[in-house]
Amino acid sequence: MKTRLSLLAGVVTAFACFTPVAAFTGSSNTGAQSVPLWLCIPFAGLLLSIAVLPLVKPDWWDKNKAKAVIFWSLLFVIPFAVTNGVGQAATVTLNCILDDYLSFIILLFGLFCVSGNITLEGDLVGAPRVNIALLVLGTLLSSCIGTTGASMLMVRPIIKINSWRKRKCQTMIFFIFLISNIGGCLTPIGDPPLLMGFMRGVPFFWSLRLFPILIFNMVLLLFIYYWIERRAYQKDIAEGRKPDISRPGTRVKICGSHNIIFLVMIVGAVILSGTLPGLSAFQDASGAVRGLHFIGVSLGYPSLIEIAIILLAAWLSFSTTPTEIRTKNHFTWSAIEEVATLFIGIFITMQPALMLLKASGSQLGLTEPSQMFWAAGALSSFLDNTPTYLVFLTTAGALGFTGGMVTSVGTVPTQMLTAISCGSVFMGANTYIGNAPNFMVKSISDENGIRMPSFFRYMLWSLTCLIPVFLLDMLLFFM
Image 1 (cartoon, helix red, strand yellow):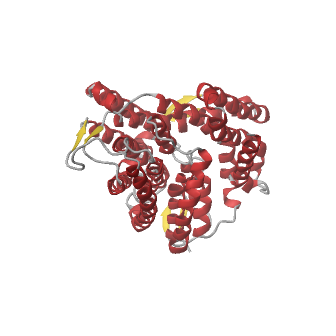
Image 2 (cartoon, rainbow, N blue to C red; image 1 turned 180 degrees about the vertical axis):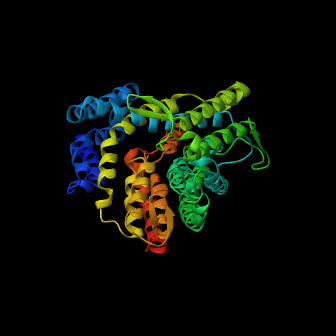
Image 3 (cartoon, one colour; image 1 turned 135 degrees about the vertical axis):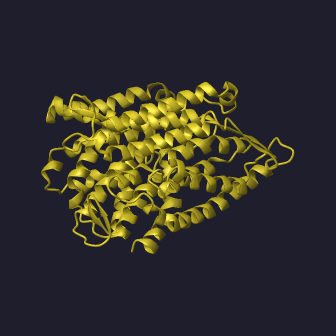
């Protein structure tokens, strides 16, 4: 056991060396120096807890994960208050909770509620070809209703048709790769980083040019998935497992389909949150977004409108859908509770790393698309990919290029903008915490009896399956 813990601790330490903090150790930027490097320890500690404790102390972790989150959060907040003042610590923490976490968890909650009221009935069987078809459908849906929306909509039907299978975690892993991440690259609706780019002057339909890269990645990953899935399927059949239906693939029925209206409401709320801040009616005389103010922190009216619409959609969904549908979906609140608990700690403790990134991002010496692709992607694997995208977009805009996409942060060459966008969106799939729906899909899968890999085993899957594909992306599109 000690050897196992030492190995896990060593791996975490190694990954911590490649997270943003290591990039700033030699920076002379005064903003970066105002945030001590050691303040990133709570973030690394929380990641270590999420990765290790479910393996070595599963019962303790299930009962005490909230205490662990509080411990690591306070381990950042209290020293930060000592070094920067209580007022600054309160502002940073409140800004993180109100401006970032609140919108994140409300969106996830709304989609979780609405998707839980939609179920699939019929004779579809979880066989390789059927699973591939559903993964393709979900990947393409991700750019239409967002990676979170597509993940919440598709996760239960795919779990349901594979319920007879013993070997099925590979399907959910590639689900996270494709539907929860890569599929969101075509529109600002698909993934929050692209919405941030749209708010900075990138045309709404510009990201459609990423379609060839999406298809390339999807085909390669589905080819890999097919051979893994085919072998697992043959083993299940050889053991005598079979679905409890007479004629596979002859009947499919969607129950609770009226909830698609509420799904569209939520997507509309996300679009409004990205467009309303640019309207003069929502800006004060200085151009700042109007909103409510709490101890130096502002919650903009566009965000409040988004939250109100999402909560209304969730309430209408529950009010108009029979309980029987949620029963068929094995709907419980445990998955959203786990995500809400863990991610408030992640959002709080990752603030020092984000501060260092924002302070010194322009000094990293990144001038080539391939460098931007890997830098944005590597950091998006562990940090919130939205501010990461914005930092590298701003950095690229400040490099003085004269040709390319004209944005509010400067002119960015098209290939470099493509690299930043793909790195931020694609590499969120590298870890469970890289993008909002990743951990939710894991939690729902675990809840339904699918033995998902641990934090590090999942990263082994991503290193084995994703990184080779990303290397080809670099050689073909960003060199």
